[in-house]
Length: 256
Image (tube, rainbow, N blue to C red):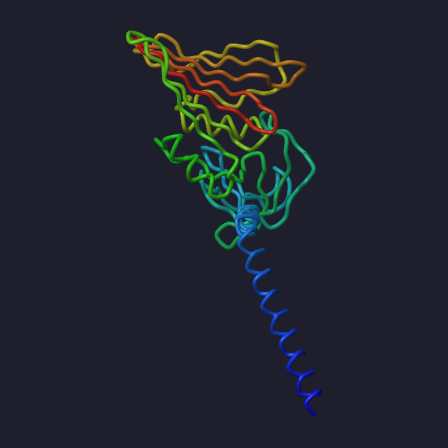
């Protein structure tokens, strides 16, 4: 009887010890992987929604083609529920290749051109790049913002650099347009065209000396988009380039 009691006691001790070790191991794993779990959850949640980036709004259509009935016009910045992804680039709109995603807007389900849809929520009017990137990091932690000051006392310069985790030129262009006031008179430049092109601002204010968009291409692929402007005592430029798997936006201001 004593041997049986001892056996049961030993077995209970082993089970309790195993349970304790398992709990400690689970807690350790949870702590170590919590950041990864949160990041993956954010990505999953973010991938379920897209934002309208078209300044004048984006049409919601009944079927997956641009000629079908228009159900609504979705304003800039609208957050849409993504229902079905179109992986193939079945159309080209203004130099932007894409297809028609199925989305939900105001309890209506229809299709919208994904070239004007983004996982990045679009900047609000007068948004500061630093604050915008800080907010964007909640869902896209690879996004970065840096700022440097240089030049001389008489000719100081200020440079802001934004890195976006995307390879899409048009996404970078629309974000740069909002963050750094690239005039809406400039539309996204078509990748196809001359290797070097300069587009003047047709609505340039009289107080500005210059306002133009310079585009560099190679084999009908964009290499650089650069907006420059100058006025009495100041000048600035916004340069968009690809950097690995990221898009780089660099704004530089010079005071005379």
